[in-house]
Image: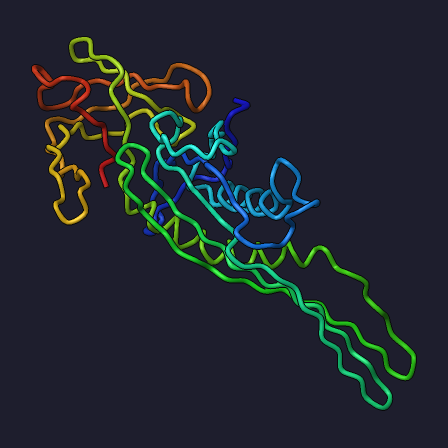
Length: 281
């Protein structure tokens, strides 16, 4: 599927057991610094934004915990999450970036050190509820040092790879924490159709579903308004049955589904829009 990239590694929860992969999209990455702006930024944004987004994408795919989906809106500035085919979206920014060079000259020696440093912010949001699951800032630094003794040695020019290394260091510190928070959130999907004791649900083998896997069917909790923030909060759902994965259909991460059979409980009288299928943890 051209719209997604998936790691071949199985997703593992903290206890080492297989975990279903969440679908994640990087909505956008912005440069909040002055670095790379002006004539170098162009209409498509500064190079540092592309560097940061590519590095984050690589770390997420390497983790094996998520399936990365193309948001199709990374440059739109939109936060209409309901239109994005992913469980979670990430909004990132480079909040600080800079370089400095220092030198030390002695009687018989001379050293030169180049340092790049970066601060990156990441925010992970549940597309269904708009709830921010994780938000944090991370910092990273990279350096290279060269020297000469009695005229022998090497001189280093401007090392552009330090930019990537500093941003990568900052992102790497955040990705681990972000995925920990993500695994605390149960994997969920929707029921596409019910026919007797057979159900078709969204999601399939690419997300880690396997034939014989048992999932819970829950009725969504009612939504109440939080008077402190003026936002709506969904109360915990109630399990009304369990289903077993039988086979798969469709193609691609956004087009695949699973055929399931009802093992226990009854779904009669429950509107589909009020039901959610959830991983049993």
